[in-house]
Amino acid sequence: MEDMIIATLERAMVAGTPLLLATTGEIICERSGILNLGVEGVMAMGAVVAFIVTMTTGEPWLGVFCAVGVGMAISILHAFTSVSLQANQVVSGLALTMLGLGISGMMGKPYVGKPLLIKMDDLAIPFLSEIPYLGKILFSQSPFFYLAVFLAVAAWFFLEKTRLGIQIRSTGENPKATETQGINIFRIKYLSVMIGGGFSALAGAHLSISYSKSWIEGMTAGRGWIAIALTIFALWNPGRAIWAAFLFGFIFVVQYLLQPLGISPNFLSMLPYIATLIILLLISFKDPRRLNAPAMLGEPYKRGER
Image 1 (cartoon, rainbow, N blue to C red):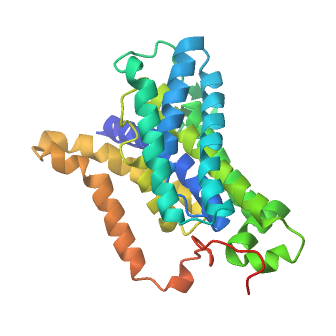
Image 2 (cartoon, rainbow, N blue to C red):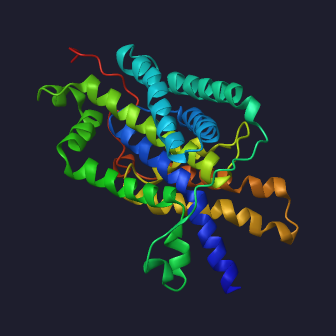
Image 3 (cartoon, rainbow, N blue to C red):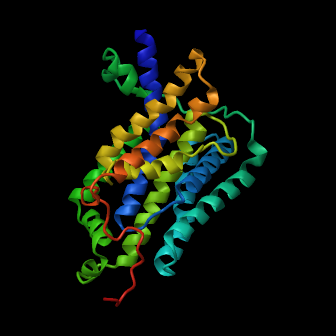
């Protein structure tokens, strides 16, 4: 029983890692006032690029680097339509999702079913990995896990304690007042969207070269949409996103534990998405003033308007 609990929590950390990466990126993006519903598509692009580059070159970290670059590049499309063209951000984000899923499916078609022989081994932290129970759960994980936690903490510090982070938050709250301080609002928004895209692509890279070590079309399986919901659940705070993401990672793992009980696999596969809907429903009853949502989230900023 003890071994099963440890194994379950260990797998929950693995399953929550891509959610934490994508959620952290979305928080940074939305803090600037840009709503990005294209997370799912960018994750898919990151997954396929990381897999192809890793399989071709035998260098997983090169695959990760290329995936992040592609994620940032394709996110520029959303930034351009949302910021420069001031188009509807919901439509633009949905278009980015469809574009990313379509291109990734086409690029990855020749690689479906091919196993990735190059493995990104787990990294056991000296001394800490020897701690009973916690050592195996927290300190003998994939490098992506440590990277995700570090980036989430760094994102919190960046948004709360640095000048650029404060400018990003100010842009999402009151862009007109921010611009009067001589800050280039458009540059801040472009940068935030690109950073969010890089994080989402990194989450996708984890799925293809660390989590499953293979590529199949649709392998993101709605995780991008869950990350958007977790952004709200975490109240746009990267620190809160850490436990929220791993909570959902646990829900992903629980569905496999319940299968021997005779519960329908189709119902169990719905658990993460049912939990997402329940959380969003509960949040909808909260006072909007306590949600900490950026005041200008999803609203285009037009220079010179009162």
